[in-house]
Every structure is written in C-alpha cells, then in structure tokens.
Image (cartoon, rainbow, N blue to C red; front, side, top):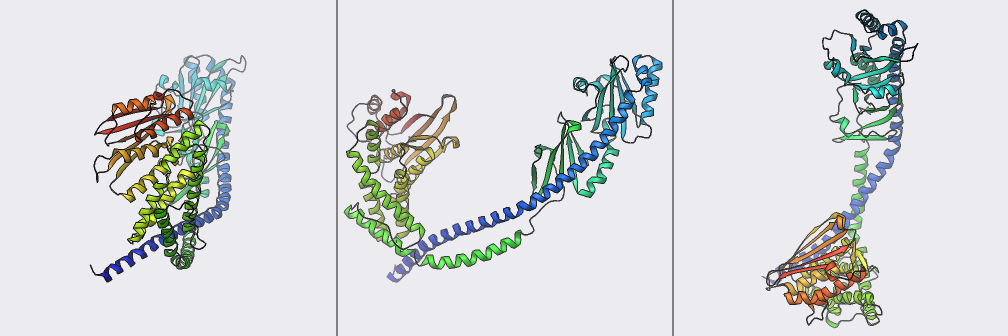
Length: 582
C-alpha cells in the first residue's frame, strides 16, 4: 500500500470521526426542534378542543332531554293504565271474562300510539297477558318472566323502572327501551301484578335520527345492568362499545387511522344509567402541514449554521484529550487536568467527568487510609479493588496507543466509555444504587474490556423490568463480572461467556441475582472457604468475601447461606446466586 493512499485513508477516517459527532449533535437538535413543534401544536389545539367539547356536551344534553321526554310520555301512558279502576278491578280477579277485559284495555292503550311496540301484564299468579302492535304468535310465560329483575322493579314502589333489552316474544325486533312498574290496588294498596311496556325501536330511532342528523352525532345508551342501545343501530365505527370509557363529564376520543372521533358521556337519571354521544365528524389538524414545513425550514437554517461551527471545534479538543491521556498512561500523573476553555458541550462534559474522576480517585485513596468503621472499610475495599490507578493507566495507555496509530475513533470511544464508567462508579455518594445504575456500570466496564480486547468476553442479560428500581450495594455486579473475566478465561482468544439473570421472588420478597460463566470454575475447597469466611491465599476470592460481608452488613443478616449460593465445576462453569432482600 502506497504512503499517499494510506494518508488519504487516514484523512477520511479523521473526517468520519468529526462527522459522527456532528451528525449526532444535529440529530439531537432536530429532535428537540420537532418536539417543540408538536408541543406548540398541542397548546394551540387545546383551546379548540375545549370549544368543541362544550359544543358536543350541549348537543348531547339536547339529545338526552329529547329521549327523556319521550320516555316520560310513555311513563304517563303506563301510569294512566295502571291506575285505571276498571283495569284494576278486572286484574284483581283472574277469570276468563276479566282477562278478555284486560286484553281490550291493553289494545285501547296501543291505539294511536306509534311509539309503543307491545304492552304486557304479569299477574299475581305469574301469567302473562300481552298485546302487540303487530301480531305475534310466540307464547312462553316462563321465558318472558326471566327477562326481568322483579325485585328491582319492586324497589321503585310503583314508579317506572327503565331498562334495555329484547322482548323474547318478538326476538326479531332487537334491543329497545322498556319500562316496568308494579300495579297496586287503589283501594287496598296490595300488588295486583306488573305492567311492562316495550317501546317501538323503529319509531324511536326515527324520531332520534331527525335530531342526530342535524348535530352529526351518534348515541349509545347504557342501563344499570350494562345493556346498551345504539342510535342509529348501524354505528360507523367497529367495536365502539368495547373501547368506550364510561366516565361522566370527561372528553375522550377514539383513533382510527389518522382520524380522531371524539365523544362525551353523561349520566341519564331516568334510566339510572349513562348516555354517550359520538361526534361522527373526524377531526384532523389542518395546520399540521404548514407548521411542519415551517419547522423543517427553520431546522435546516439552524442546523446548517450549527454544523459550520461544530466542525471547526471537533478534532482539536479530542487531540488535546488524547495527549493528556497519553501523559497519564505513561507517567501516572493523577494531578493532570482535562478541562479545556474552548470546544463544544460534549467535549466539555467529557473533560469535566474525567476531572471529577481523578478527584474522586485521589479522595478514595485518602479515605481508604482513614477507614474507621467496618462498613466503610468493606465498602472502600471494594471500591479500591475496582477503581485502581493501574486500571485507569492501562485503559488510558490503550487509548493513547490507539491515537498514536491513528485509531482516533476507537480512542475517542474508549475515553468516553472510561469517563462514563467512572462517573457511574463515583458520581453518587450513596452506599447502594439501583439495579439499573449497577447494570450501567457493568456495561461500561464490559465495553472498556472489549475495546481493549475484542475477544475477551460475551455477556447477555435477562432482567425483570420490575427489578430495575431495587437497590444493591454499589459495584456488586461489576465485581462479579470482573472476577469472571479475570479468572474465568480458559484459553487466549476464546471469550468467556457470562449470563446475568435478575428475577423477583415476590412471595419471599427476595431479588435473585444470578451470574454464570463458562470459565475455568472454582474448586470445592475454595467455595467452602469462601462460604465459611476463612482466609484465602488468592485474590480472586477476596471480591466474593467482600461482597458477602457488605450484603450481610447492609441488610443486617448473619448467615452467609442467606445471601449467596455458589455452584461450580472446574473447567466447565461457575454460577453465583445472590439473594437480596427488597
């Protein structure tokens, strides 16, 4: 490969690093701008929706009032019939003559009243006397009686009880409104039976359609038992009844494709139920295209200017970080500072994080020397075990090598990951952190390990979503993962496979954390010493001992078997199960 071709390739690589940063920044700004656009649109639409809601509520009030008046007229007719003395006298004696008289009076009540479909009398003996608007030849008193909750009708004490249902004697008519009331003797106030009136759904829907057509609304009525009546019976939206939220005085919508259909719900006292009005005119945002076009134009103008500024400030700050990282890697100067006076926000954040990391490392080294209490000593020993200067030296040295061989993208990624790792480890002063935060530390640690040696580890996770907010002592999982990587590799070039599994045992209030690898394993003798807390001759067991001690101290436990189980087979696998109370 010629030197000129090589130089050209390196130049392209350097430009690509800059472009990745610029592109990431531009994408972030673009998302923010579009978010602002939709927020503006939501605020603008809120006032419009309020006005439309008031209109729909007033329209539903009109429909509800009309239906209530319609029902009250039927109540008046049924009341007149139930209190008719001739009718009551005929009903008090169930002989053939009186039954014929009852039939005649029922027929008279139907004459000229198109809104009534049928009238039925349930006598004290449980017999049913019926008259229909159109001839019906079905006769099944027992099945007819099963349609009604007679106890609920009795509770009305003579007033009308309204419901929605299908008359089994006219099943083809379908659902309609019906009223039922107790017939009481005026003379003795004793119950003589029940009066049931079914409204004619055809006539009722026709009267309602005249109103609904003018206000572009469709209605569903629900009674106290949950039965529903649709007006008209062929609603435009499929499965509408399944998605309705029957909450009074709230404004909801149903989304179908890009369209929204709004509806409002009110109480209907005469039915002891609810009425829902659906505005069948779908609403779309007519101003959306204009706002979108304006946002795109402003986005292009803004991002074009921002990109010119960012491009001039990408390479130099990264080179500055790489030079200082090289000094730390070779000379181990912990007093080195990364902060720069110029550059863009992302680089400034990285340098600040690195400076915080260096300060925290120095503070931790001092605190370890001054440890006074057992809990602090154990905690700092774990942190010291993880946050060792040579880990920083080796990682930054690796970054400086990558920079030296013009692998600046990899060097930049390594430095960023290192900063994120130490920020996650050191930014909080809490002794315990959430599983989510602990897993982030593990991921950053593994990422550093892979950048330094791509074939060192392969890790998978299986974590309950509910477990992410539960807390554990800091650096617990990362210590176990580090042990698996450092002491589990069986063969150079062959990665160690690690699987982290976190599940909640809700009946026991225990969080089970399992870390399993296919490494060299741990001997039975070593496991026995760890579980008994005996002194070890090797460093690999120190991490486990410290983790056990910290968990026992943190949760006020005494028995090691309460918090950890270790199973292993030399040359095949090691599995560590932590049992953390939550």
